Length: 293
Image (cartoon, rainbow, N blue to C red; front, side):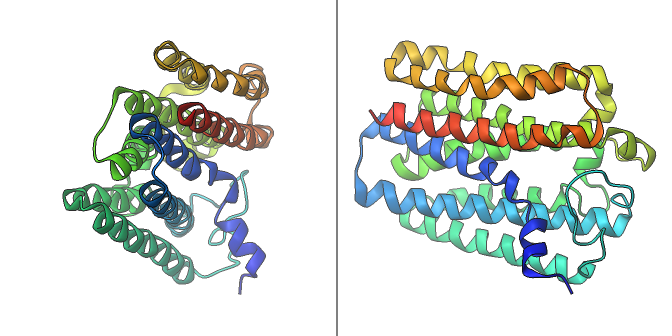
């Protein structure tokens, strides 16, 4: 039986910035648009955060379960896995995934009810389905090289724009630009993970984007995903000068860029995951502060 610390480790807390960041950026875009109304912004932002964290944990457990039962984690060089290490039974990990996704769904319904935007139920259902079918089901899209695209869409466009829309009930160009920037930074985390696992994924037939692009192509894309978010903020900086604050996050991009461009492989890429998470989180928090000014 897995210990509590193993369950926490299995939830992959280092990936949680990918859930916090879009809510922070979306809240910032909403505050820039309509100003701060505590009675509206705070409860809706907190519910959006609960949804994002639950779905992130859910997709992590679902990925642990699905890869574990397929045997693709048997020669894993990455972080601890509950199913692959046999610390927990596949059924227990599956229940944890369903529980986390279910909590996310309930919190999402609460947010939708408060905001009165019932048509977004479809978007929420799609997000939950995407979380499960990343590595679950008969034809998981994560095995087809589509994982990064779905991360960009759901942890970028949907999460940021969804948060902003839930607070203001409208979208702005600032929200869309912020969503694209955060989505690309979220892609860095997944793409780094897949670059690290490229040799073993190739052997087990897991056709991730990294496998399809190859080592060099993946590193080029990673570099672009780290740099382009800052470029996307230029129009926002022109529109709202305090957005220059996001440049304070630029030094955090140096270490992951150096490691990736140095050709580092395998377990030595793990520090990039933490660095990418910090970059995304700090970028989003600085953007929140800048847009709230």
